[in-house]
Each structure stands twice: as C-alpha cells, then as structure tokens.
Length: 507
Image 1: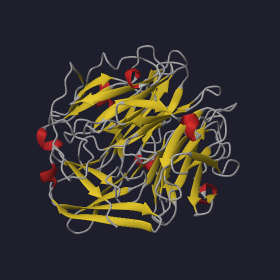
Image 2: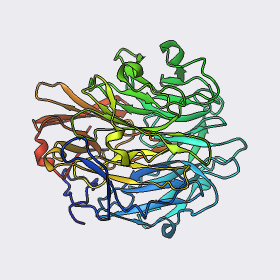
Image 3: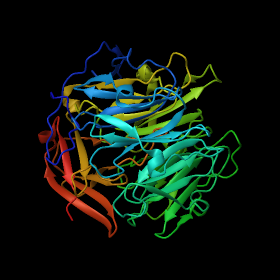
Image 4: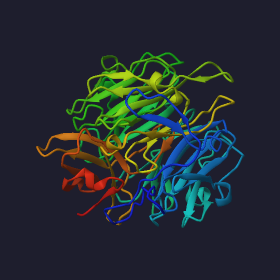
C-alpha cells in the first residue's frame, strides 16, 4: 500500500495517503491557475450502457473501489490498487449479463465487518440481488435466502436506501419503484421482512429518487421522494410509529405537473453552510432546490440561486471541487431521443452560498454523463474527483475524472470518516459539522442514504476549507435515545494532509 491508499477506515485516527494516478489522461482547460480535470484509464471505462455507480472499500485494503451497473445486466467492480483500477467483478462472482440493475448500494447488512452489495432489478421478471461479501475474496448472491429478490409483475427498481429506520442498530432497506409500489424491509438480524406494504410511504408513486435525512433534527430519519409521471413529490415525517406526508402542508408536493414532468433524483447537502440540510431535486421539468428554514419547513430557492434550469436532469451530487468551503453541484442531463441522446451536463459553482454559476464550459471534459454521478476523493489528495455514467450513447462510458489542482489548494481540505462503536462505517444519515474557533458552523455533510441516480457510496466525507485555521468537528449519530453528538476539538487541518480523521462513536 503506497501513499495513495486513502480510505483505510480503521480504528486509528490517521491514514497515510497521497500518490499520483497512472494512465494517459485527457485534460480539460481550467478557469483558475493550474486546476483541471483529467480522465484516467479511459480505455478501461469506455464500455457504454452504464447506469449507476457506487463507491466503497470492499476489500478493506485502504483504497476506495467502485461498482457500476450496466444495461447488459453486468455489474462491473473495479478494485483500486494504489490509484490504478482493475476490473474484478466477474472473477469474484458478480453477474456479466442477464438483466438490468438500475440501483446499487453498499452496506454491511449482516454486521460482519464486510460491505455487501445490493442491486435492484429494473425488469419485472428478473430478481434483485444481494451479494454478500465473503471477506473481500468473492461475492455470493443471498437475496432469496434473506428475502430480498423482490420479483413481481410491474416492478422496476430505482433508488434503494440502506437506513436504520427504527434505530435498532442494524440496517433496513427501502426500495423505490418506477412502476410499482415502494417497499420497506426491516432487518431481522440478517434476514428481511417486508413491512408497511400497503401504506404510506410505500404507495405507488412512480418514485425514482429517495433521500432520508433528519430534516427537523428530532432524532429520526425522514424521507423525501422524487416522483415521476406528473405525480406529486412527498416528504414523510417520521413520527416513530408511522410516517406522515407533510409535503402538501409545506408546499413541497409540486402538484399540477404534466406526465412528462417529475422528480428524478434527490441530493442532500448544506449549500449555504447554515448547519441545516437542504434538498436538491433534478427534474425532467425545472429543477428544485429546497432550502431548510430550520423551523420544520422548506423554501424553493432554485430560481433565486440560479439552478432552476429545465434540462431533462437525471442525477445530481454535491461536492466542493475547488476547496473554497462551499458545496458545488454537478447535474447529469441529456437531450434527444433513443438512440441519439447526448449529455447536457451542468456544473454549478457555489458563489459563497449566495448563488450558483454554471461553469461547465470551463471544464468541457466533464460534459460526459447522463445518469449516475458521484463525487469521491478516491486518491486521498484533498481534491475531490468525479465519476459519471453514460447510459444511452453508443460511445459513452463510465469515467473517472481526476481533479488536479495546485498543492496549496488541495491542502485546504480534510476527509472525515465517522465510525460506529465497533469501528465500522457509521450508519447513513449520520451528520458531520465543522466549526471555527468562535463556534460558528463552517460546513455540514451527511453520510449518504442514496443519490447520484440510484446509488449509495460508503466513503469518508470530504470538506473543502476556506483556510487552514483550527477547527472542531461534531459528529451527530442517530440512536434509539435520540441525537448523540461526538466532538473532536481543536484540530489543525494541516496535520491531516493526505490522512483521514476517523471519529468513533463513544457513548
């Protein structure tokens, strides 16, 4: 393991990292001195028909690996070997054909310390799959054994979320459906029981995007649904023993949309650094940005912030690509009809939380995705990188764009990995906030419950920093007793250059 081994989520608080990436790159022009993106190992990732991508360190070697679902039914798994990627999925037991998976997510569902892979089928006659990770050496499909095949007429799986909906310590699964009912599966110690089959929030909604977050900070995960085919969106407030759709009351349901309109995904992030979690919704119509008012409500500020474009948007992901301390927004979109779709991507730079400016013309190499998108600092150099999928074009692929920036700019970052009491990655929905010496919020991140178009990644949380001044970190865990805040105070970011700050739950 050399210095690019950045993702060693161990109990120790430090991780050595930081090396160059191999491969002949294609380079984009940058708008600022020295920063640009380059496509790595493009020949390896040039197979078209890719849909969703998800990152995790499946073999626990300290490097982030990633999986990609293909329209052919294949699931490609790329092992990260010190910054160079090798395709290993077929050799490890993942499928090469036979269906179409449009949702993919990593989670340690059985608590054995190894991240497993769930793949939701978008074909009614093909089962979904749960690939149990056998100590990083092979995968075994145990979906039928544990009760997660999900085969039924009229089913087309989209976003799946691993969440601890009942705060009992294990991960449950919420599965959305494009043409059938959504489903919630309770984890009963490694097997699953379908619950709430015929009640909200599992009614038929033509759901494509689902994001869980504790938007009102009451200690329970709530659920936002982005729905297609003109159906209204939903925000289900978790009241402990039931869910209540409060979207109509809050003005978030978006009524009156035509059948060609609707939400396609959702992405949770604190775009204005006020400590509250906001929701961006890419739409086939105009995009929506729900700003959290901190009083239990949201306001659509998409027009005010400059992101209300109507561009047939599909996936979206937040990431601070220039390390200025504010989350930027990448949106996959496309124009045209099958088989002639072409990408129409937006990269919105965050201007201090006041507005967004589309700078994709400054980085034309990034105009290359129409479905999945994930930001991830896969090489641990402090500059967050971009991965996209290209589902429709015959010349598309599923590319990694390495973010190359001057060393001083890349140094203004810190990667933080919240861990549970066992030293394993914290549950989705866990929140991390940075504070300055005057106890002012600098930035907020949340462990992903899903996004980027049908994906969920298990990675450290990347924070760009405006300065290298001392900071404190607060990790908020959602527990059966409510919100538990774990502090790590008086951190010098310079001491974590090329390293990870791991924060372990301590009750």
